[in-house]
Length: 158
Length: 247
View: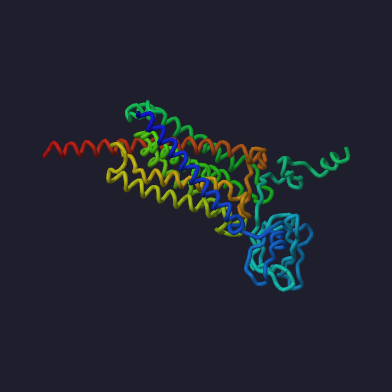
């Protein structure tokens, strides 16, 4: 009899745990967009964000897009997520890690012309960790392999 | 498992293992930390601040691993009524909370130079802070129920409500793990996945040492705390008996 009640408790506990975790995960997945820390440029394009609404915009800084304005303290740059690109402007001191082809999260709002006016910039780090000697190597997100551009070109030609 | 339900048998096993875990873990984590400080290279983007990884990652691992341990103990208490389960849960809670706090603090120190902010309410950081609060809740419940004897047995067990709280709190663990995948977050995505590691080998290997070192050390602390709780209960039981006999 002792064995039976023990089994009963095990089954009950397992059902309860599955139910609670299921409920938690459902709630978390329902939060999906609400809990997002930032909008990607494509989210802005698809959903539309009204001008003046305070949001965070996150993505990669497009290579060659950072341009210093005439006043010397304002920078203009483009943010992309690979699907859409949004022009942005920031006045102030950018963090050291704010670079082209690197992640950024900008806090601010869109103006009437669709330019994102940032009042704060955060640099976003990606999941790569590597020594300086490997900088410039191309990272393949699907294979997790590093290879130089030369290697990649050689592979393409083959 | 019930072979170790007898505290005397458990103590007979825990006593000789503890020093091995303690000194072995300490040796590994100091070696790993020194290698991480002096032998591994700086990161191409973060520079020297990457080295906080060697404390931050083991802390996150043990903060979450601690709650896994508490949940397993809670399950063993609920289903098998294992007399040491409550003691194990109480013993894990404090170092688990400590490592969770250490994870948040080291992350914050790393975030300032890397992201440009001490704290942001993104999914990963918020869910990790929730884990710390869960630990505080568990510690308070366990202390209260162990003190007024509502726990099972006379081994310093905890109440059933505390165990249920531990199991429900486990919901937060997959949320912490997936937070950087489900939601756009400031925290970077997972570096080490089943497909491999995007951390270069020269930066990765000291992390293995500190991870193993901190884990062994955590085990030693848990065993020491379990022994302390059992000893404390023995003293209390003896004092109660003496008071009764003296009357």
